Length: 140
Length: 107
Image 1 (cartoon, rainbow over the protein chains, first blue to last red):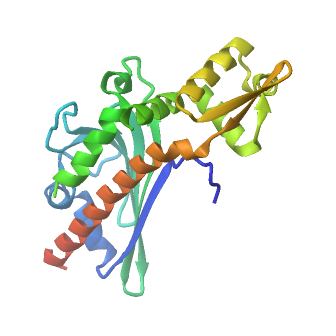
Image 2: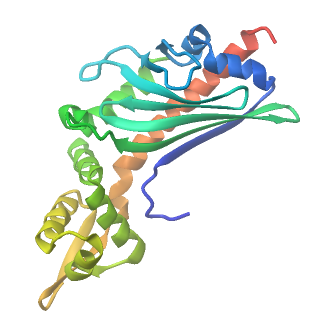
Image 3: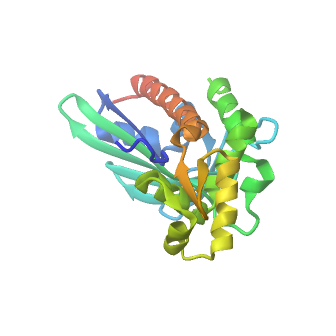
C-alpha cells in the first residue's frame, strides 16, 4: 500500500446468501434497481445511455449520466457514472460461492470528464463534496 | 476547509499537474530542473503548475543556492480521501438496501 497514492478505486465486496441469477435481476431490472439504488431508465443493453436520478439539492440536479459498458449475465455488469463533470466507471462482479454469491462492486476512474464545456468548473469540487455528503446522508 | 478541498481537487484535475505530483510523491524531493526534464513541458509551465500545487498545499519548496527543491505533502490529500469515504458510505448504504430487497424477492 502506497501512502501517497491518490485513491482512484473504491471496492466493496460482500457475500450474499442468494443465487447469482437473482442478484443479477436486482442489478439489471429498472424497477428493482430503483428500490435499492435510484430512479433510473436502465436497460441491460451495451451502449444504452441512461441516467440515475436522485433528489435534486442546491447546486446539484441529482442526475447521474451513465452508459452501459458490459452485460455478461449473470457475472459481470459495468456502466459509466458521470456527474458534475466527474466521470468514473462502476463494475459489478458476481461470483458463485459456497454460501451464495460474492458481490463485488468497483468504482474506478474518478477523472474529470474530457468535455469542452467542462462541468466541473461550473459547479466546483467543493460543492460536489458538500452535495455528496447530503446525498449520502439524505437519501435513506 | 471547503476552500482547501476546492484547491486540492482543482490542482489534481489537470493531468500534467497530477503527473508532477505523483512523481514527487513517488520519488521524493526534486529540483524544478529535474521535474522539467520529466514533464515534457517548458520550465515556466512546470513552475506555474508547481505554484498551483503549492497553493493547494500539495507540495512545499525550499531554496538551495540557485535551485528550488520541491517535495510532496501527502497529508494534504485528506479532502480527497474524505470524498472517497463519502462515496464509500454511499455504496455501503446501497449494499444494505440491495440485501434487504433480495430478502423480499422471490428466489
